[in-house]
Length: 261
Image (cartoon, rainbow, N blue to C red; front, side):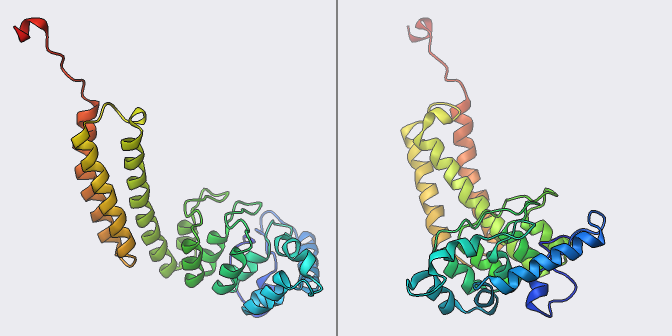
């Protein structure tokens, strides 16, 4: 069993922040040692309790109140890692504390940081079935295409653990991202013709820029669009872009002197 994925029970804070390992790779003595280290982390880190209980105000006091006894080492405590490379943000993800994630993100933490096995916060939330936490992370613009040591995206991890709602949400997030990336790619090609397949006529350039602008506006005004609608919008843009790019890549015929006469 992997350290970033849910154990069979969630009955205590220690269990939430414990580090179960894959059975084929760890013997009992190593597991006992890791359990003791995890328990020590629980008892000494003053950020753990508010992170697990959703006490955003308590966390803010530690980070922002110079009079707080832990203020000077707040960031160090937050980023302190266990033996598999997880910090307290992972504990908050496992506990489904979306508001805690949003609050801590304001202090400049790297939300795409990976554990020793390549798991991100998004992988963690997906494995534990924390849908609202997934939504919060996607809103915070984390990398939804990041891969763990199994070459799995967060969506794949959610599917492996039968977290159906998480799979559906991440499918939607990936469809939205695909449209955004395609718009950005077309826009970059138009503004920097050296990256494109050839010279772009002014009329075609205006058509492409207008199409990209309209699709961006559509994304901004359709935040709840379905996957099918997102795919349809991308296809519409491709139908405009493809013939123009094809024309760009086609060598222009130069009239000979004989044909001019």
